[in-house]
Structure formats: structure tokens, C-alpha cells
Image (cartoon, rainbow, N blue to C red; front, side, top):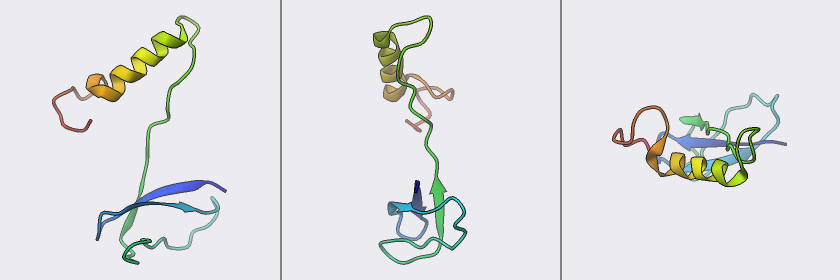
Length: 80
């Protein structure tokens, strides 16, 4: 069963809920029992070898992205 990440708009708690993909019941915050929650989405990790590079090159690219060198919006936007 997959786990989904949610953020409560009331208390800003971030929590995971394991539930079926077909489950459409409302999700409530595990801290404050609030019903104003939104699902949080994360970009998938890109780890491994590419056909044109080595594992160390892939790791270096991943490190650069995670340290503010990627994202498409620039390093000064504050979203990193």
C-alpha cells in the first residue's frame, strides 16, 4: 500500500498516510485532526548511471541540484 505525504494548512504539520490508491475518504491531520490538508508532491530521485556518464557524474549532478544549482528558477529564488 503506498504512503502519501500531506501538509496540514492549520498547524503546518507534514505527515504520511498509508492508504489504497482507490481510497477517496477525507484525510485528517494526525496532529490537530484538522481537515484542511493538501497532498505534497516530490520530484523523483534521479540516481544511477546514464548511457553517457558514470555514476560519479550522476552523483555530482544530483549534489549540484540539491545544493541550489538546479530547479530551473535560479539559485536566488529561495525555493531550495
